Every structure is written in C-alpha cells, then in structure tokens.
Length: 206
Length: 322
Image (cartoon, rainbow over all chains, first blue to last red; front, side):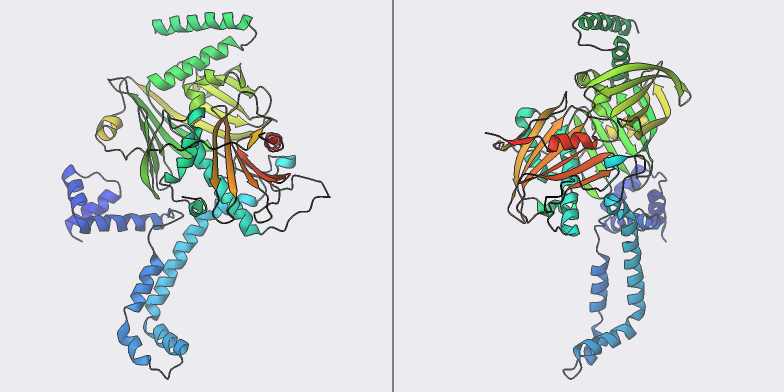
C-alpha cells in the first residue's frame, strides 16, 4: 500500500486531508475508482448498502466466467450434451470463483433483504396502539352484496408502491416556489423529471 | 430585544381586536408561535434531535441554521445514522444529497423533511384549520419549556404538541398525537445551542461549494378536472390537480392534492375496469394512511397523514364534475 493509498483510506475513514490531496483525488482516475470501491466496501461491511445498488455483481461474475475459454473450449465438441459438458468442467475449474461469487451475491442480497424489510411489512398490522379500523389491513366495506374481485397480491403491492412513491414525490414538490393552485398542473406533471430512481417509475408515462 | 417587545405588543393588540370578531384563539399561543417563528428564522443555532416514528428505528438528525451578513438564511439538515442524507438550503434553493441517487436542487423556501416546516416558520397560517392552546410549563431537554397544543378544528387531522424553549423560543419537543391522544410521531431535541455567529460549517463548506442544478419544470397545459371532492376538511384546499395516462392498462389516473400547508393528502382516481387491483384496503405506514376503495365505478385511493375516518369521508365524497 503506497502512502497515496494510505491517505485515501484515512480520508474515506473521515480523517481530514489537505486540499492538495482532494485535488489529486479528483484528478487521478485510478485513485477515484479506488475511492469509489472503498466506499462500497465500507457500506457493505456496515450493512448500509442502498436498496438499489448501482453496480452489478452478477454481471462481473458472468464476465469472469466467460473469460475462461481455455478450459471450456476443448470440452465443447458437438457430441457432448450441451448442459452437462458445460457444467461439469465449469464447476470443477471455476468452483472456487463460483462459490466466492455466490457468497458475495448472497451477502449483497441478504443486505438488500434486511434493507427492504420496512417495505415488506407494509401489509402487516399496524402497531398495537391503533385500535379499531385503524388497526391495519382490513376490508373497509362490510356490504355482503358486493362482489370482491379476485386481485393478485403482486398487482396490489405494485399499485401500492407506485402510489406511495408518487405521494412522497408530490409532497416533496409541493413546496417548490412556483407551487400555487393556479400552477398546480405544472408541478405534478413535471415530477417525472425529478432524478428519482424509484422502481415504479416505469409505470408512469414519460 | 426592545423592538421584539414592541412587535409582541402590537401583535397582542391586533389579537385583542381580532378576538372581538370571534375569530381568534388564545392570544398567548399566538405570541409564543410568533416568537418561535422568529427564532427559527433569525437565529444562528445548532440542534440535534431524534425523530421517532411507528414501525421504524428512531433517527438522529443534526440541524443547523445561520444568517449570513447579507441576511441570507442557510440551513442544513443531516441524517446522522446510516450512509448519510443531507439537505442544504441557501435562501430559496434547497439541495438534496442522498447516497443512492444523484444530488439535485429544488426552488423552495423550506426543506422537505422530518420537521413540520410550515408549523415552524408560518404557524399563524394554520390558524384557520387548527386551534392553538397554551397548556403550561414543563422541563424538556433540561430546559424550561412552554407547551402548546394544536388541535384540528373539525377533528379530521392529527394534533400536535409543541414544547418551546422558554427563553429562546425554539422547539424542544414536537409530538403528533392521534384523536385519542395516542402519540404517533415525536421529535425530541437532545441538544440546542444558539450562537452569536454562524456555525463555521457554513463558511467552510457551504459557501464555497457548488450546489447541484435546480430542477426546472416546464409549463404544462392544465387538464380538465373530471371529479371533485364534496368533503374537504376545514382549512384545506385543493392545491394540485393533474391527469396522467397509465402505461399498462391505458387507463387514466386523475390526481388531486388537498393541503392545509402542514398536512398533505393525495387523492388518486382511476376507473375500475376489472383490470386493476380493486379490493378495498386500509393500511397504515408509519403515520401515513393508505386507503383504497371502489366507489361506484371509480377506484379511489387516499394517502396522507390523517385518521382513517377522514380518508373514508374524502373517498366517499367524490362526484363527477358536471
């Protein structure tokens, strides 16, 4: 580890560095990439991975597997059953890599599961302090004559997420200065342009 | 201090004149609220507080405010746990920095976050919707605090309890209570420091920093409103309306927002055509309610920080615009 990298490591840990170092960091592509990696490593160690990580581990694993032609190529004769002939040498030769990769993927997914928990609890009953009808998920109408359509849970959840996200955006944009009742349409329809990476975005027209 | 006193006196006079017309409330409450709003906007302070919400971990925040020599307000709100989420306001530009999305700025006079901004900056604008009562003194965060209770006039929204520092006027504790008096959300200040000059953070980092571009919104033609709400809680008005096309089923989604400045209610209307999710749902997420029901041939969804009864009253009050 060169002094440069040590400085970087200290910087990522929150220890102050002088202005020159920050300038070097900004201008040095290698150092910047390393800075980015340090943060990702730190975040995953601290279980702080965002819900949607913007890097693709499975992609790099696939790339690593595909870049081993020396082992795969001889086995790929036309006589071999395609699945078995590919899988066995693949497992044998890159077993370690695959195990390491799947552990990494599992760990990332694990973090995301942990982070996702608040969302999955949405349909659980609300805390016990709410009584009566407020107590969580319950049908509103007690009319027996109404036919309840058969609705898939996924569809329900998707709609729920979309509207909740939209509500948050609308509330956030409500306070933008041009927001007056006359200009209401301007605000709400422009919200697609907000740099928000919510997963439900694709459900809204652009 | 002298001119503040004069201002308070004037206000007291105004309040008494007003009281004769039967419109106004506890004059002491107004004095305290005015003091709070002035302190919030005119002092240099550094506050740490903890925000508690149902079903979520309590979140600690750092909140700093400064007035520059040119009289420009600067404000910073920083989430202290986790990967970081910082909001910086300089005058009327608010910049949001979040760990998993590109930073952006909005043109706004206050930060959208855990603090009830309107209540803190312009409490008197909430007078039509809420009743304010001075309750008494107690000790909060090791300081003498004045408690003020805020209740919605028509019992359609949750109430607030404010504890203000007796000397400074800044809030020490804010809690949101439901109609039965059960606590829902709470902001508890753990440290409060008022300084004569701005915190060095602003001079060192904020002033020299390049803030992300302000997101600009292009004007859009106003859509015709097909539905209206016959029930609107006292003090609320419709502040937004839009119509959007949904991709998957080609249906239209009509959107309305009701607001009293403090509480925002979203109403979504969609034709119930058997293709969209249509079963009735009431769910509470934190202190927000998600209330969805089929009303005639329209699927109505109401979202906001309101009691279920209010959501029901709003959802059942839709009628077609003739």
